[in-house]
Length: 296
Image 1 (cartoon, helix red, strand yellow):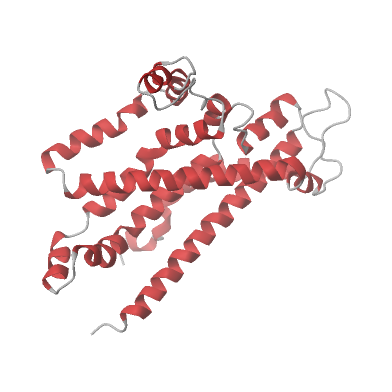
Image 2 (cartoon, rainbow, N blue to C red):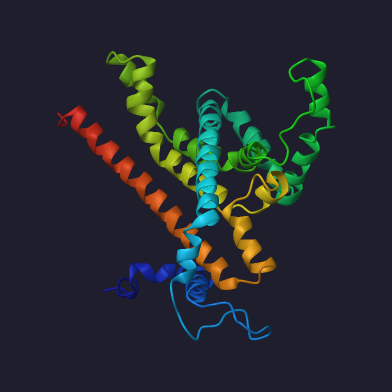
């Protein structure tokens, strides 16, 4: 028996496990503990009082105006993710199937080139573009598409636009990788057996691209729901999301326990939505297998 066989397979993953535990599990554990505490009654007594632990912060986070903001956050994240999917899938499909191989690396480079610029600067740039007196507003007025000044800044629509602009590459890249791995011979064989382009796409391309679609949707949705910069810069008071609410409770109201409770509620909601999406995909695959019947 070789010495290598005596080492468990998971032992090679211990650096990543330590990294994950130190930078995620332990901070998340402290946030959970803080969410069970209370705001100190006397100034200077510390950020959190842990003398009496309770779930009052969760009750407050799931009621009143906070619940409305949670709903706005989920709606904004879902709509932004769907918009990225509707725009990103055709782009990824064109890159994987229509663009010559020698040009794909160039276009992929241009796709990720905006990420060389600071996320904050890219978001601030949209304020210049969407300004009521900006070049876009003037151009739309000159061609007669709008009567008055452009009134999209400091609204939920501006937040949606910022989310799509910032997270669209994260949707395109996983889908592109999944589509590029599909063997073209499978599509040709499907058409040789009598399937048309639409049926070949639905039965061959879409199921094989499902992992990339799920990965892109997962990345975009989680980052959109937890975003703080885009709502703060482009949304104003009308684009309030949970990230801004958590920051307000911690930095302005000095109520770290309530902010921690809101963060944990947001994490729970994201986990529930992701779990629901995974269950829907698994159920859809099962129904598809039943519809196809047993393999010959």
